[in-house]
Length: 187
Image (cartoon, rainbow, N blue to C red; front, side):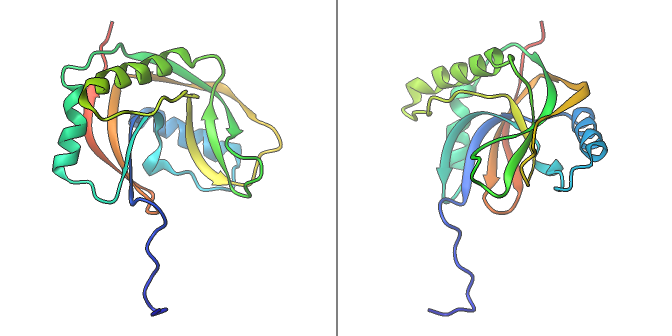
């Protein structure tokens, strides 16, 4: 084996999912809160998002796949909603050295989960089964050392979620490419 050649990444090169991406004022507020909290792990500002529904893993994402995955969402309707992140907490396995550090909340799971179910219903006739997911509302801010306890945010971060984005996450590159967007309905 030629040791000068880099090893290919383990697993698929792309993960595709539906997410809510914080608009610039919300992302700026998250960055400011992160800075003021004194966290040592760097904020992943370019890829801040709240995952709603996983769609696929793929070696290649081209226009045909993006079109196929967007088609079930034509004329998609779902009401915009508000969410409030009131703490920074650990997420994931307690055994991991570098754990996800997330903006999160308690008791606001109903609407993001209803949105995930609505997406799965749209995909059902397409023959592309989506995995059933339970959405724990959170935005991964960084990966780093575990916090001894969650940090309460005063004041909390308020976000009016009015857009859904189909994202191609390029694995290992900290890069998200939007494939399609849908506005959520205002009341």
